[in-house]
Image (tube, rainbow, N blue to C red; front, side, top):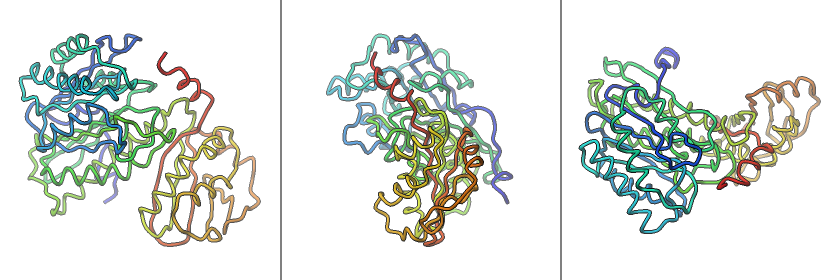
Length: 405
């Protein structure tokens, strides 16, 4: 059965699965009066799993969420945008814990069942009085409409990022939904900036964790905008079992069906982040074919997608295939460059490591599209890997040169 038949895209995001509510409000954390406090809530306790930034400098909310989710269950996530609460010492930890307590009190659930996330400027303290008011208001406004929450977690993003699918699992209709934020400081080493995945599937905690890690490694871990890994990266998944399917464990055949569903949602959200890279005008997809292993294929694809020279060539609509081959060779994976073919779209621009004559006008037309695909065939094995990025434009410099102001 094809993926299109097994999984159906549906409208919505984190509140699409049964039993999930969300809200997003303006609390005055951000200077532009945009929504900046979000609350996600499961009506019953949920199985939980998460992955976090591998940056040695971890924000206070990351540390607190690691503590709270260590038991494998949660019921809510509270998020603020505008201030990252990173590099804030003991005060930052106190504030992150207070965010969890405020949300727990408002929802009448244990504080340990609340995950905390923040995103924004590093090194500044949270305005806790505003945060408190925002959390109380968000708790009052919880609903099945998740759009406001998806908006409240944004920083320099230009669009919200939501996605949901439904499929049959154990004879029951199951939904997986998600929302994410990310536009700059994107070069994850586990996840992405912030992403929250919900499902009404009934899944064992170990199986949920395995599915999430597998999906993240092939989605969020394969996107890049600027080569910077954030202090606040986090992906949290909640499964509340409201769909009523038989409990899924990792040793059951239907586990792969569930894992694939999580992967699909993660990939779509990851691509939205890459497409919305700060100042970006094009989505770049790099496909590496016939590698010795999937891991090596992903490493090479990510190296190409993160190359500033490749990204500027895409922005300038310059068919500079040599930069692609150079970026592939710089990542530490061993291959024979004399065996490599490079494609721009469907045009073969280099074969066996050497350039070929090609239709320049047709190549220019491909580079003028909003989605650009580069394919590298290593002729070394049978494995494939994909990474996503964006072009590097003048606007990226403008956005980040005065980010604090």
